[in-house]
Length: 123
Image (cartoon, rainbow, N blue to C red; front, top):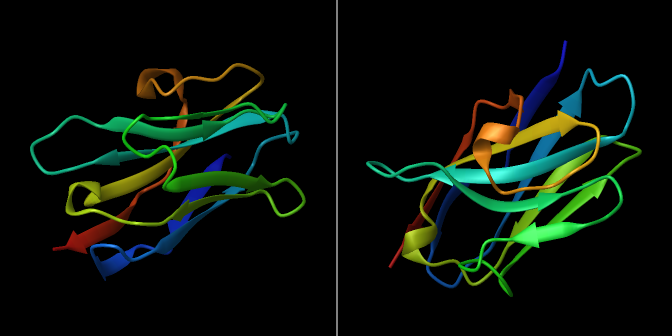
């Protein structure tokens, strides 16, 4: 059974930093694409960043230059380093994954999801 468990959320002031982690288990191999998504109250879920098994990475324009996604294959852990945080980065952050290749920031493509971790950025 595939499980994704996020951690690392919290409350910070604008300009601050947070590092999110997502422990991924249950895939029969390490070949999978994983990503981070976020959802603010009253808004649709949006893709933030994703990383494929071949190292391909995509970012949403809103986070380019501020967020960094990485994956530790040995530990099966996905990370999101978030710097220069803004109030508009506030939301519930989810990690998601799908076995095999390919990459997208479209949430419908991902088959397995974590429960989310809250990020709140105050001005």
